[in-house]
Image 1: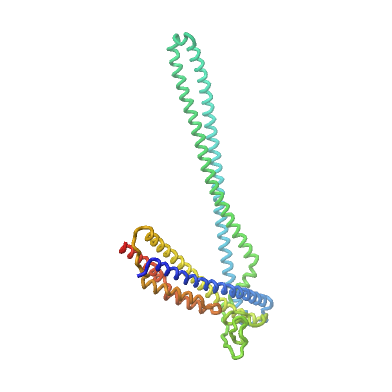
Image 2: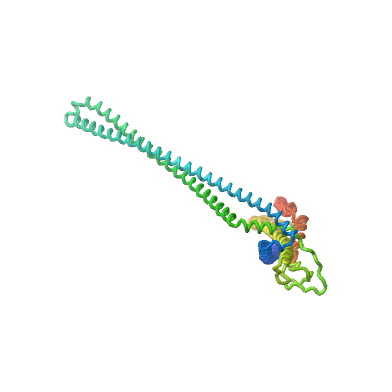
Length: 414
């Protein structure tokens, strides 16, 4: 049987295979993005040509096209108006909510000011009572001092006692009033602090709502300003979106694509493989329509390829993270083996995990092939591979089986 060191070597090999797969996929994704950017620019150019031709003179355009434009325009206008109405409704709701917060803030401010006035008045009354008490205490102190001077202390002893008791009462009341004044001030500080905190929250909410409403207003204004352009663009785009180009066949002697060197049917305006333009841009209606139809097909092809590539890159990165985490677990067990007087653990990678781990090499080879010119083929093959092999169940079993074996052997041998 193998050792933990062999287990780690195996895991490092699986990580390297996954890293090769990610490198190949990242390079492929970069090519897809380059080609797709080119397709987007051509697609926009062809769409603008069709829009200009549609706006220029519809009497020279085919009747079928004019009919479809008129029919589709009705639905486009309805959807545009519905969207505009929805945005206006959202803006109104935001402004109403903001106004509600502003009103609440005003009421709270008025309430706290009224409360402040009452507390100030109560404090002034207590201060006046406190001043009167201090004055009375001074009087009693003087009387007590006069009665107690010299031999008067003995003569007036019984007279001084009631005075002392009254002074003590005044002192007690003075202390109580001072405490009430301090309590009033503390209560006001607490209420003021709470008010400031709540007001800060309301201000933030109001600002956010006003900002959202302003953003919607800008969007509504932009839509209204570009209404005509948006309606025409959306209508033309929708009319040509579902058209599909006629599929021709390459003929002997056909000029190869300058990029991928693949032959193309004479009727094609773009390479049927890599979407490279094969001839000059046609600016007439028929030519623009044919080119737009072709480029839409390439748009769909490369969109699916990019989506599949992004999905598998995410999957590979997830697998790599899982292998790294499991490798660390094995390293921790090996560290315990070296630190404590334990026997060298004998363990092999389970056969089921080895069989699934071998798929990482297949994945690396799959990613290393040049599918840059065949995005639809890449997407189809990946989706099939994902459905059959790289399933969530298989991935989970790969790691769990190794973890269970590691635990089982450690418990049995240690």
